[in-house]
Length: 327
Image (cartoon, rainbow, N blue to C red; front, side):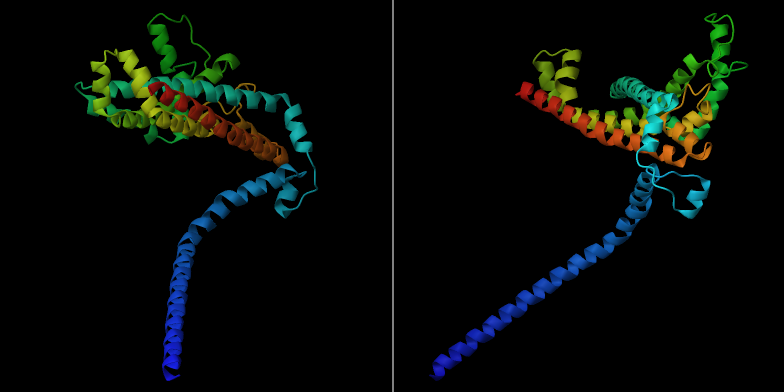
């Protein structure tokens, strides 16, 4: 009996120790989890106040009938979808939406073509390559508003560098109204934005080209592939994930361009260069139609949320096709 009692006591003590060990491990795990949440708390608070709160407030404004008085009081009558109907019925708002899409697509096409060409060029060995790679980031050193003012002086009709150059080369008989002609003003902004985006595309694509394995290039050469075949069938499929990320980031940066337009044309002439960002600013802070400005901003948000996943889905489809062709 004593032996059985001793065995039971020993078993009970072991179970108690195991339970205590499990409890201490759970307690340590909870402490680690709590410590992790405490470290994340500042970042979460920053995301809430810097991103989530403005987005929620902008959505609320878009459904309210706002005025300077209601903005000061933080309360306004509910307007339903009136603000959205107003912007879609407004010809200037509709033009700003379509113009933003056109501006974004053309910018990305030219930025990618020029940036990829420069990345391929910098992958070659030639004298001054390091200096050229350093100079390519010059557009990034200037604030967007400063770049807009510089291009404004370059493209101005009287005394502008572009007109002087064209007339000296006998390509133009008289000064061209780059910034005052509604048909040319948007192209002027497009040229400036392409110039700004080339360094971004060049550096990212150049970095991707450096990660292409040398043995893969050599194997393609041994198999008899020419330069164009190596680029199309070997290099591009390998760096395609970087290309899609670069284009996606370029889309995000381009669709929200604001400073450049304000510095160059201010949205004129005759609203011919108004984009979603500039026209929503005009509605909100010049016409004090805060609800319509917020609604137009939400159109931009929805556009980004729709186009970005759609582009990634299409890009991944082409990537899978490339891998299948390679196999």
